Each structure stands twice: as C-alpha cells, then as structure tokens.
Amino acid sequence: MSIIRVENLTHVYSQGTPFEKVAVDNISVEIGRGEILGIIGHTGSGKSTFIQHLNALLKPTSGRVFFDGKDIHASKETARDVRFQVGLVFQYPEYQLFEETVFKDIAFGPKNMGLSEAEIAERVHEAAGFADVPESLLEASPLELSGGQKRRVAIAGVIAMMPQVLILDEPTAGLDPVGRESILQKILDYRRETEGTILLISHSMDDVARLATRLLVFDKGRIAMDGTPAEIFDRAGELKAMGLTVPAATEIALALRRRGVDIPESIYTINYLRKQLVSLREGGGAC
Amino acid sequence: MLKDITLGQYFPGNTVIHRLDPRTKLLGLICYIVALFLAKSYYSYALMALVLVTLSVLSRIRPKTLLSGLKPLIFIVIFTGVINLFYGSGEPLVQFWIFKITANGIRTAVFMVLRIMLLVCGTFLLTYTTSPLQLTDGLEKLLAPLKVIRFPVHELAMMMSIALRFIPTLIEETDKIMSAQRARGASFDTGKLTERAKALVPLLVPLFVSAFRRADELATAMECRCYHAGIGRTRMKELHFAARDVVALALCAVLIAAVSVLRHYGL
Ligand SMILES: Nc1ncnc2c1ncn2[C@@H]1O[C@H](COP(=O)(O)OP(=O)(O)OP(=O)(O)O)[C@@H](O)[C@H]1O
Ligand SMILES: [Mg+2]
Image: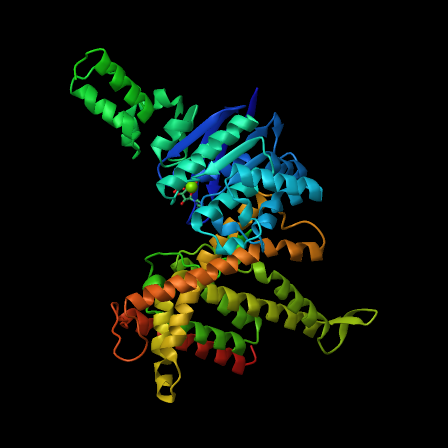
C-alpha cells in the first residue's frame, strides 16, 4: 500500500490579491513505502510548495493528502502527528538552528514528541551518527560551525524524530563536492538501515540519477513526467524543453551514439557508462 | 497569517495616482489628515469618505485590499469606539449601572472610529501606490530645508528606505523559520501564554541572527560601492512636478477649504 496519497492538490498563494500565484496545479500522485523518490523541476515549478503539503505545513487550497490512508487535515492533532512521521528538511536548513548547543538543537524535535530524557539522548547520538556530526561538536554552539556542518546538524535534527518518510529539499545546494558526496552517501546509508521512504528534491540530475528509484518531473506546478530514471532520462529532448538537463553520463552516451558508437540507450550513471565502454573495448567493438 | 500584514507593501501600477510625484502624495496625505481633524459633522465625514473612495477607484486599489490593512488595528478601532461611546456628555439615552450612553457619545464614537479608519486607509493608499524608494526620495526632498539646522535628513531617509525594503524580506524569513520549526513539532498557536512566549525562542533567535547577518552584508555591499552620505550625491531619477501635481495640490487646498467652510457653518 502507498504511504502517501495526494488527490487533486492545488495550492494558490496570496489568493484574491494582485500577487495571486498558482504554485501547485491539480496534482495527484501516490508514493509507495520504501521508495526513493527524486523530484526535479525548474526553479519556481512548485516543488517546495508541493512537499510542504505532505507534512501538513501548508493547507491545500483544494484537494486532499492522505498519510497511511488517513486524511492529514482531519484534525489539528493529526496534522501535528504527521509532522513527526514525515520529516522535512528545508532548503538551506542551517538558518533554523537556534539552541545554545548542537545537542540541544538536534533534541528539539524529539523533545516536542514528548520523549524521555534518556530516549532523547539516545536519538540525538544516533541521528548525529547518521548525519555525520562528530560527537566532539555536540557541545559546540551551532553558530560557530561551518556551513556544511550546520547543514548536517539540521538534517540530524529531523532524522532524530525517526520519521517514516524523510523529505530533503536540495540537501546538497551550495556544498563542495566532498560535502555533497558525503551527504548523499549518508542518505543512502540511512535508507538502507531504516528502510524508510525518501523524497529528494535536487537540481543535480547526477544526484537523483544515482539515488532515486523513481522520478517526478515538475513543470509549472504540474507533474510533467513520472517514471524510473531510465524512462525519464530517455526523454532528454522534453527535459531540455522544460529548461532541465540530463545527467552528464546520459549526455556523453547520447553524443557517442550520435557518432555511431554502439552502446545501449538509457545510461544515466557514470559507473554504468564506464562498464558499458569497458565491455565494448573487451568485445573488440567500434572504438 | 503573516501574509495579512500589508504594512509598507506596494502594488505596482500605472494609474494617475501612481504617477503623481511622491512629494505631492505626501503633501496630499498631510492635507487629508488636517481636513480629517477639521471635520466635525456627518456631511464633512461623508465628503472625506467620498474623497477616499474616489482615490481608491482612480488608483485601482480594491476596497477589500484597502480595508484589509485595518485588520491588525481592529482592536484599537473597537476600543476607541467603545470608550467614546460611554464618555459623552448630556442627557443619557440608555443607562445601566455606572454606564450611560448619550446622543453626544454615540456621535463622538462614530466620528472617532471613522476618523481612525479614514486616516489609516488614506495612509495605506499612499504606501500602496508609491514605491518605498519614491516615498523616501520625496520625504528627503520635502525635509531638505531642515539640513540648514544640521538635521541628518539624508541619513534618516536612507534608514527609512532600508527599513521599508526589509519588511517584506523579514516577513518572508519569519514565515520560513516558523515552517521549519513547525516541521520539528513546534507549535506557535496553542498552549498557555507562558508556553507561547517560550515557543517564540526558536523563531526569534534565528530571525535576529539572520537580520544581523543581512545588515552586515548590506553594509559591506554599500561600502564596496563607495557609498557615502551627504553632499555631492546625485541621483538617477530626479523628481519633477508635472501639471497633474499642480492640479492635485489645488484639489487638496479645495478640500481643506471645503471642510473649513462646513465647519464654520456648524455642519
Ligand atoms: N510564500 C510564498 N508566497 C507567494 N508565492 C510563493 C511563496 N512561495 C513560493 N511562491 C511562488 O510559488 C511558485 C513555486 O515556488 P516553489 O518554492 O514551490 O518552487 P520550487 O520548485 O521549490 O523552486 P526552487 O527550485 O527555486 O526551490 C513560485 O513562482 C514562487 O514565486
Ligand atoms: Mg524550492
């Protein structure tokens, strides 16, 4: 059974003013348990608006959202409960840190859940481990950390609630390659251990190509495409028309095919591309 | 909820009102306020309301938008009305316990409420139709004579324009931080008063941190572009009075005159 079901969701900002803006336009989608769902789309296509509906932060202008079969806006309590089940890490989450120490900041979520001190401490240490926050930093002030460290603390703050669904809004934006790599790796590790559902918004096609089991492509507030990475990246022309790119590996493979090199379609990770090229040479192919 | 705050918001447009010189609009607002305080009768208040409606039609600002500016002030408006209602002098119409309502009291209450509402709406009309930049430019020009007594007019105008510029940014930022903390189970609108006050910490700390960071960045950016206040600064857009400004100012004078005449005849 799907864990999240969205029915005819529409969201209009500043309705009834000159600044009215339809950010999400009649979206219906089901998200299955254990999926790693990549969400891509041009700037302003409504991705952030969409995900804020999944944990009841935004109320739909029309349409409904179900978590585990229950309408999340059924009452005030269900809306708050669902926030602990659907953890959301915002874009640039480092600006939300406020406590005196990193430990207390990560503990904010579990504390709001009403857990005991011992449970809270356990969760903080566990979450810090997942998000790669060294134990030595736990007593530091969040304000004196580097940007990448703050980002990890913020992610740990959400993981500490042990949500069934973890949503990350551009978790690697503005990080250096090493930082990106480590965060992505940590997300995969987390997924492997908890078998949770992950939603990942990213502007990096290479990132989603590597991680996602399924992709949603947003365009002007609608879902323009929905499918496996292979299916999506086969439609390179359409993606480009929406102002998106394809992963570097796909780009290279397409260029090679155009020159008559005999490699399969739907190549979207560097690893797979390398494998194909190596096997081509061993087989004594066109190169 | 925060989106309701329209203070300092500007609705771009290209109507006559939008195109008026900001100095004219500022002077116009002052005239309107003076006229409001001269008004003493239902006739003159009707005239003042008519002026406001005309202006809002001319500037294509919907009455609903204009009235929504009153929302945060609703308590003050009601409070003023009720206080004035019970403090009238003369023969009581209704009396209970220590309260008495007189015809005079009702009259004052209605007038006070009307006065506040018209005043606020008039002021909002100015900010809705004038960009913050124009507004401070106009203010700086109008206050220029005060430079003679070393009053820091330019600095004041600069501070005002920066403040106005950052109101929407800060509101947006507040909204974002609130959402982020709500996502971790914080709740800002339930619980006892002390709990609610405590709940503000996760909001205010990041907000202040980011406000200081922004101020710092802005100062650096201004310095990098060799900003210095005071003499010798020229501007890209000079303000010019046009024919329509003369007409508008003349109409303002007529309004004050009209209300004065009405007042003179006890109307
Ligand atoms: N709080 C808000 N008030 C009014 N309009 C908004 C608000 N937040 C977003 N919008 C508008 O809604 C549209 C969708 O925004 P959203 O943030 O969901 O896009 P996005 O796909 O996340 O973009 P990005 O990739 O840049 O993060 C945009 O046009 C934006 O201007
Ligand atoms: Mg976004």
